[in-house]
Image 1 (cartoon, one colour):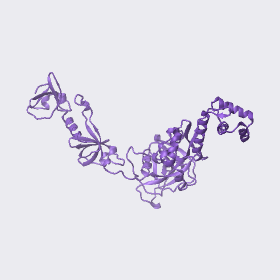
Image 2: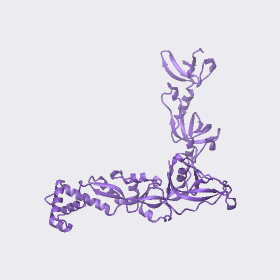
Image 3: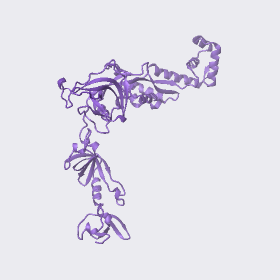
Image 4: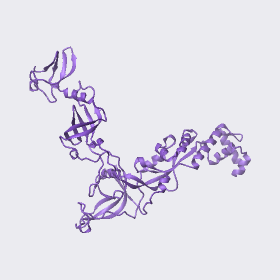
Length: 465
């Protein structure tokens, strides 16, 4: 033992341990930490001209890395809860420690880990990630080998009830046009088709009612574009006519559907058949939720950018190869366009109630009761149509009116929690759904015990961020 270092011996090997490698804390005198003849575990760091350098401080890291080498992602391990922190739990597994983030403790929202586990409790968890930073022998900051685990991965996700939620569906159809030269209008393409079909100038004039001078001008244009010559179609002209015929074939029986922009992503596309067999939307209610930017982006899809879910769900199997052939045809442009005179139609989609509640919890707090709160990071609804209500207190004189929001699909009442995370807009609507009956805050119902009652103020669209 010396003032500046300690020597450790194992068999014929001798190594030097400096104070910085003796313990995690500051060591001013090696004798405060070690004594002659004491047994200890150490790790060899490096060997130079002056001999081996070792570390007692790195021994637990070496043990942890050896244990972690025996497990893989997806393995189930058992361990004892060592420590509860605000953001998660540290678990002692044989030879190493596993960190369970608070979001992986349960499928529901957890405010603090103590709601799920307690110190000293033995639990089973699934390894989701193994962290073994490189360079740990030379760099003390890299001595943090651990496993990241999940408690909720060991139990099935609770199945959410579903509710039929109304959304605004944008009618659309898949459309095709041939790529024609600029200034080539419908009359010009018709004349080209007639020429390609072997019709003479005079017969075209008789069919269209155009005078010969106008037809000559059209022919001159077609000749300048290398589409016709001497009242006969060129090869390029015949290819354009074939493309026009292919586009017409698709457009005569277009692929139609509805795009519900505010619905869960997996359920945004509906066939007309699904829509026609749905329940009617209540008269006097405002337009259901929609996402204008998503609708605009959807309507811009062209050619190979057509959404794959659209093809899988709305295009019959016998038409898919034909549509793929048209998409690959460089003479055509395949795109989506809005369909019909109405910009939207109400559509009902069976939707997870937890998806709706997750969106509400992000910016609201319940007026009363405790609806299920999904874990942080769950998919959530962002667009709602709600009833803005005024709360009237039955036993309070001169009390200020309180505003609450009624969500009709979950039949829950909410108070705005974070105004900066909500965009609200009043909507037209003159018929309201049935509102909850007066209840005590503790949930007891009965008009004689009522503390408050609701008065509908207006419909409003609410977007949460």
